[in-house]
Image: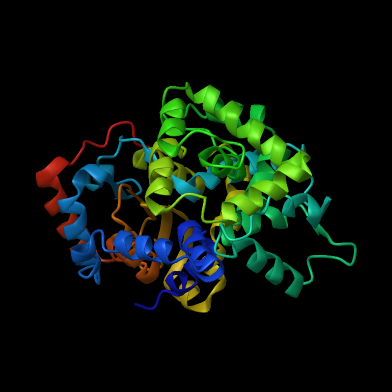
Length: 410
C-alpha cells in the first residue's frame, strides 16, 4: 500500500504508555517493573500475533464487538454506510483535539485571535511533561526551528501552534490552546453546535495529574472511585485546578515531574483503568459527522472549515498522497488500551468523499502495543475507504452482529 500517511502518522500520536514504560525500564532499571511489563504484554498475546492484515483486524472487531465502534460511509450515500455501535460513547484520546482546533478556527475567523501574533515558546513549554508524549513536543519544536518559524527571541506565530497539536499531537501545544481559547468558549462551542452526548476537551496535563501525583495519599482504586462518583463538571474543575497548580507553582511542577518519572507512578493497567474511566468521550457517529461537515464546509462556517482543513490535511504534503487523493484529513489518538481514528478522504477516482471513525477501547496490552507498532487500524481504514469489495465484506460481517440504522446523519 503506497500511503505515506501511515508511515508518518507515528509522529502525530503521543505514545504515552510506550514512553513512560521505556522511561521506567531504562532510567529506573527496576527488575520488578520489567517483569510486570512482560506480564502485561502477554495479555492478548494470541490476538497480537494474528493482527497483520485488515482482515485480521476485522476478525478482532467481531470477537470484541462490545469494545469497538465503527462508522464509514460515502457522503450522500448514508443508507449503505456502516454504523456499528455508532452511538456508544467511548474514550477519544487525542481525537478530541479536533474540537480544540474547531474553537481556534472559530475565534480566528471572528477576529478574536490573530494568526501572526507572536507567542513565547516558554508559554507553551510550561505545559510539557517529558516522557509522556513519545517526544511529540520536542519533534514539533525541532521541525518548527528547521523551517525558521521560531525567531531569535524564541517566539513563534500563533498559527503554528495548532499545527503542532494536529501534525505531531503535541500535548503542550494543546494545553496552551485550551487555556488561550478559554474554557467557557470551548464549552459554549459544543452547545452552539448541538453536540449532545459529546464531552468537552480538558487540559491534558491536568488529566495526567488527576490520575496520580505526589500530593495524593489514597490509592489508585480509591481515587478512581471518587472521580467516578463526581459529576462531569466536578471532575473538569479538578482537572483545571491541577492544571493551574502546574502552571503557576514551580515547586509543585518540579515535584510532580519527578514523581511521574519515578517507579511510584502508574503502571500500564492503572493507566488503562484511569484512561478508560476518565478520558473525554464521544461517539463514532458524531465524529464521522464532524469530519464530513469539515470537508463540506458546513462545520461552524465555510471559513472555519477551511481553516480546519489546512491543519487536518497535513498528510497531503506528500507527493504520493497528492497523486491518490484530492483531500485527506485525519486525527487519531492513543492512550493505554485505547486507539481512535477519525478521517475524511476524497480519492481522485471517487465521485464523492468518504468518512471513517474507528474507536477501540479495553484493548489487551499486547494487542494495543502491536497496533501501535504496525498501524493496522490505519491500514484497515484506508482499505475500507478505497476498496469497495472490502467495504462490502466489513458491512456484511458486522451487519449480522449489530449494524445500527444511520439515524440523524447529514
